[in-house]
Image 1 (tube, one colour):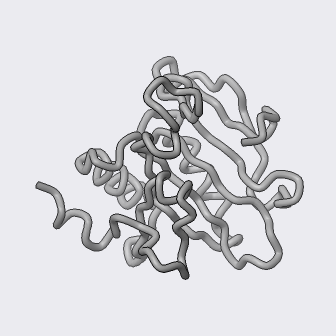
Image 2 (cartoon, one colour):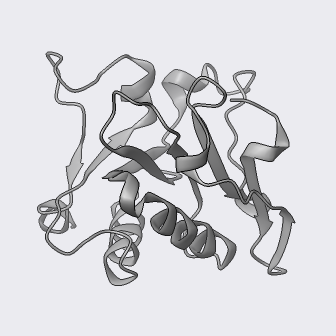
Length: 173
């Protein structure tokens, strides 16, 4: 992760204060300069420390993410909605890809802390739908960080997601 603060929106949702604002839009930053813009809040920090006492983060993490793919025409407004939702405490952490001429869409990852916490995974999906971040007729997928670190991507031998927005509610126990 690029630690240059200009690419990070950081807030404290408990005090409703923006600690570090990032007014850059995904369509204004080229991938070769910075591949991702980040948004997160300090109260639920994104702990990706590999020196964890529990072992290697790549094998112990339960972090996962809903994956949205948004056209350049809409990505700036969707990203602003996500930043507002993080500031208000509705979402945890997120990132959005920046401009890459060969891609026709921007990837947006909306993270949850624990992919095994199905009620929370569904709660985040519900928010994405009711807030208009996810369009009603689109199907999105949920992938674990373990899958990402293991190199599981579309086009490979393994399915690169564990939940789908059109079926995840049926899995709730």
